[in-house]
Image 1 (tube, one colour):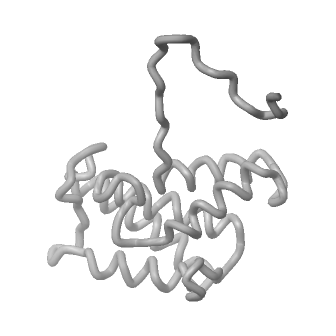
Image 2 (image 1 turned 120 degrees about the vertical axis):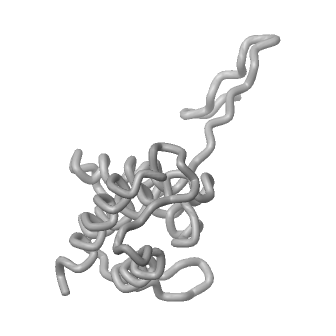
Length: 146
């Protein structure tokens, strides 16, 4: 017997489509739910928050590797600043101080001329003007409460 929320079986011979989760879109979706005043107890917010904690990293855009990395940093910091939680635990038990970690990561990636750019040019992130703008906005948001 089907339960509420179960998906119906696809028609015979239909192709299956798998949608992959990845960091920047998880944080963008979570931020949209927050802006829509969806409560933290909502299953969508809980699922996005749990996914984000399970996949916490600043080494890549989880699920996309280097693609869209600087947009990921920007939306991650914007989302976490909006949530207002200054630190959180990840499944390993480590406490993440996301503001400090994000600032340190961005500063470690800054080029000698003061700009940033992504060697993975997907989403135009090879353009130093675009990526530097992302980074300045990200740093502004991350440092806003310091």
